[in-house]
Structures are given as C-alpha cells and as structure tokens.
Length: 117
Image (tube, rainbow, N blue to C red):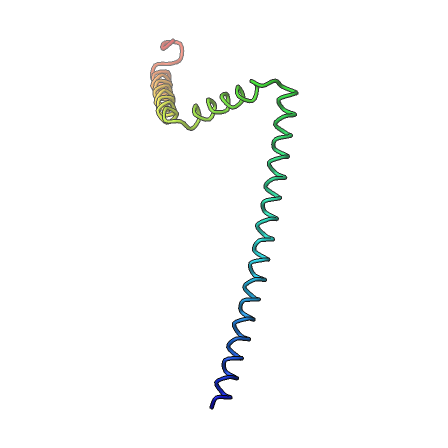
C-alpha cells in the first residue's frame, strides 16, 4: 500500500512538473509574440514619424493642418447636419422649377408658343 502511494505521489509530481514546463513554454511563446508586436508597432511609428517629418520639410508646418481643416469642412458640407437640409431645399427648388416649366408648357400647348411669350 505504501509503495502504491509513493508511486502515485511520484506520478503526480512528474505530471505537475510537466504541466509547469508546458506553462513556461506557453508563456515564453506569448512573450515572444508580444515582443514581435511591440517591435512592429515601434517600426510603424518610426516610419510614420519619418513620413510626417518629410512632409513637413517639404510643405511647411501649417499645410497639413490647413489640409485637415479643408477636408473636415468638405466632409461636413457633404455629410454634416446641415447637408440634409440643404439637399431638401435644392430638391424643393428643382420641383418648383419643374412645376413652373410644366405649367408653361401646358399654356404653350393650349394657346400657342407665340401668345405665351
């Protein structure tokens, strides 16, 4: 009985040690992945910084800001809260103009082109 207990304890100990080793390997792989990602992110930031520096050297410091403002203005003009109202107004104008043209054409057909003008 004692021999069986000792064998069971040795088996448990070996199993625990294997599990610990697997855990260490998994953590090592995890750390490697994290380090790779960190290196890639650092490289990406460096490239972005270089590109930004080149752009500023070529165009001056305020151009990027001005371009950003122009882009924002254009976007808000097209997609902003007032854009829908503006589109509706233009649609109403077109409808009124089409209605006017239709009435004028109707009068021309009824009384003749020379009489209406």
